[in-house]
Image (cartoon, rainbow, N blue to C red; front, side, top):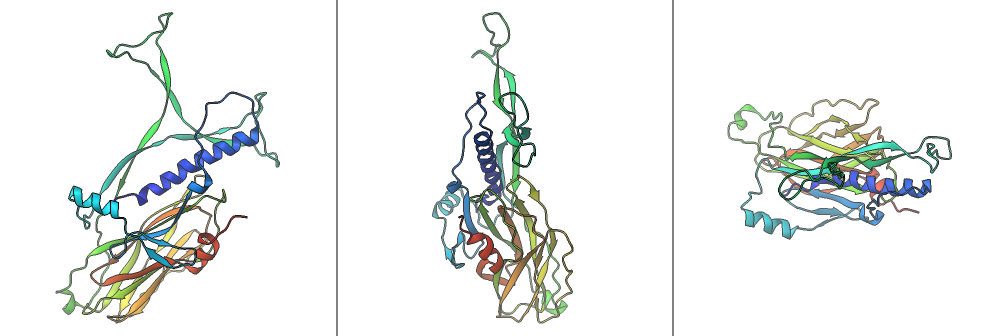
Length: 327
């Protein structure tokens, strides 16, 4: 499986850069000559809520809240041609993204521009640097006066994204049965982006839902469902890191006590009880949301103990964000 879900937040940041720069220039009304900047249509800054996992790659959630399985044939063909194993524990992608900085917006007379509330206006711009121009033979190019020639180039930084390898989780089956049981950890990946309202979404409550079928003939015990990694970004280019409270599917055993969220941004996986053969709903709740417009989320579970049968957005997320319609 290709590592494209990790790039969604990079797309989010670049899209926000382009839209913000366009908006600031339009409002500022400056007559100063500026280099043309690429802009992005708001129609291109939406990615539907999608889940990817072993049992249903490319599951898009519709506005009605139901899932439609949509296999990515091109990715599968590419993987087959390259000899990649779908169960490869780790995969690394390297790509370059522009380096940006926040600068003050100035009027034609050089004064700092302000909004209706008197606050200074800022915009995000790409960072450039001047480098020497060289001839075909590698010699430094000079102008008619013999001075070295330079040119402005955009500064980029390299982003290395690595799929997490299978990680051990706390598993506590009964000792007698555990001797014949081998856990195998996998990830369910969820991602979503909506920049059409040019601001963030501030919902609370039920966020995401994963339904598991508990496999037969597994030992009694606690099978963790954990949030392995998150990337959550706001319209203002802020990357949020929530507190995490992980949960479990307790098979024929008592659920372990879970902490309650404090006053910080928190994602909590609700623990549930089950018996072999049961289908259970594991919900992820969100509290003290600072506001965001895009995310990726890795949910880790033991695929030797449980099989994913359904994935969808939680009721609060679906009603407040996925089904949002701009006025």
